[in-house]
Length: 57
Image 1 (cartoon, rainbow, N blue to C red):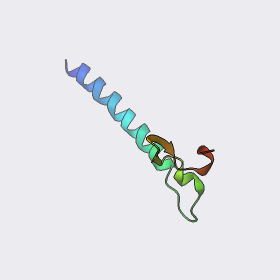
Image 2: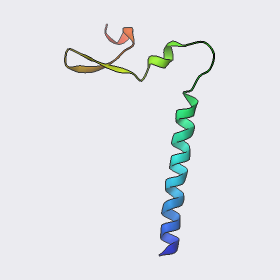
Image 3: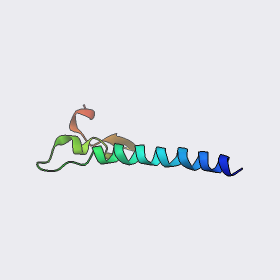
């Protein structure tokens, strides 16, 4: 039983670390870049669309 709990906790911890690394890769320093807007969505006539201008056509 302890082994099962340990394995489950180990798996969850590794997933948490991977998620953190993925999120930290998005952090940028220095000049602003348009990719900062890639994950922002706005309500546009009742639909959630990316804020990037090229997505609105």
